[in-house]
Image (cartoon, rainbow, N blue to C red; front, top):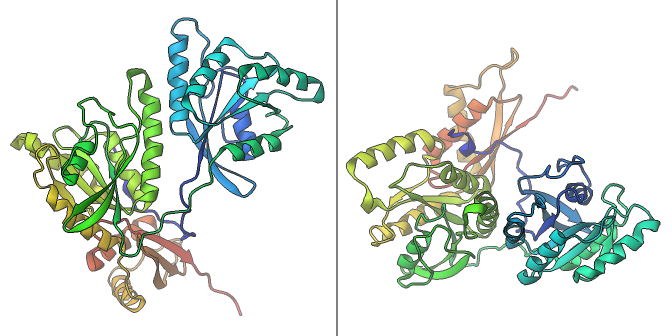
Length: 456
């Protein structure tokens, strides 16, 4: 595993991200045109399309918009109509598709009509209680509209005739989709003097619910050795250090043997949603086991979301000296890019050292909200460049003109230069910024804007 995902973003500073948007899952049998319809909704070719069943295997989210409203479209794999175990596979796929969705778009091939597989999917969707929009696809002209009418038999209401290939009827279909989706909630702004919002993250069975119960001083959440017991996020107001904190336990959906890949995908969607609502994340890591790719992926999501971070190494009471030494080596090797995150060793089971999380949370939030005065920033940068100038590129020496802190939460800096600055030098600037100003527990973004000389 590489530490690359934890490198701070070196990007232009854009407008702050909007709040979480509603999710539409697109489901249906193989080769009914789901991916083609997804591309039509997006207005661009994103999903892989081929005229054979089963091209889409993973569940892939895309950002979409219609009528001025934003939403996420999740393209899903089709269901193979094999007789053996078909019903179980259909139910598993449908449950995964709808679990993280606010509404479901069921795509049916109007030319062949409703099949047994479609009926099985409909039964699962009906039990879910989620809004379902029925797309009668491959209605390419007025003559074939009668084929769509036959899909009233599915009992999902009006079939919306559409040609994903040619775009016919797509506008009316999208209007129906928007009517089924909830309005995107505005991004939560911190309440003045209100509780700080903490996302509690970690892979299944790492002890998130146990830790929340310890912090709350009560059995607020069901705890079981089975990985993935928690199905839905649970918000809890917890008093720590004499202050209220709002915790979100984000275990995601339950796992089953035949759902592992899909469960990981939808758990990541829920983790992302929790991060969008949070200010700081506690990522719980099982210290008794080797660090996994799932651990590093969750940490990467926190960094990319620009949230303050605390890493809690749980099950510390189970470690012997040999394991502690191994863990130190794993941290040095795998987490080299996030050495800035406070580390707290805890035992959620016994409550050992969980009180230390308050100080770590305060430290990370303070770093997340730190602003450096422009004069002080440029004085520091002048000394830095004088001691270590940027490397020559194309025979020219780039000059750093000045810098400003564009934003906080997280700290974002814009460096104005006369030429391109190598990524390694940008990382050097970030490292020195941390040494000089702290920024403990927060990602730091450094972008460069080139100002070329203009002729008279």
